[in-house]
View 1: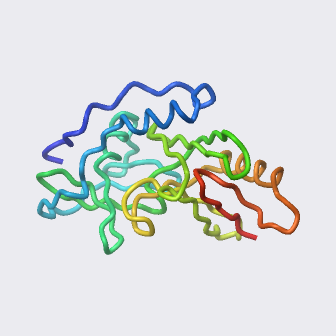
View 2: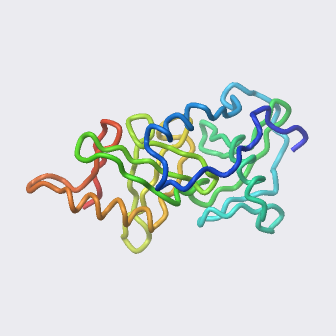
Length: 201
């Protein structure tokens, strides 16, 4: 891309999720300034020759991008268009990028509180933090073998924005907490940030 984003530089790696409180995470989320990609309307300049594989690996020209900081940078200028296409966008240009499933992956989750007071904090592979709730809902689809495939809304318009696939280890944590807390006659699921997310039957 001809011109990089105008966001602040990628910060140093965050401390381990287990050592962070939800309040500390909320402050970190509030302090992070993403570029205003939704307000940019540059000309479409073709394809970036990039794709994001189903497992969340970013490729350029068929080769995996090995620098995490570069992937983090590209992720900040990722946008989903109204027609469902994904693009990398700067004030100067807009380039298509192929996405096989979700563009991001939630690799870790931490729970704080219980019942309706619970908050679920997710860390993405790009080191971004997201607290699930009404503005960042969890949804469930099904894999080809029928197993649940959970997604977390990260940014953009709900239903057509940027989502993260919840990695299997993080989903197992969610399922364990949900089953431990299930009340008789009620659906299996978890609260986070004041919203209840039911798991598929």
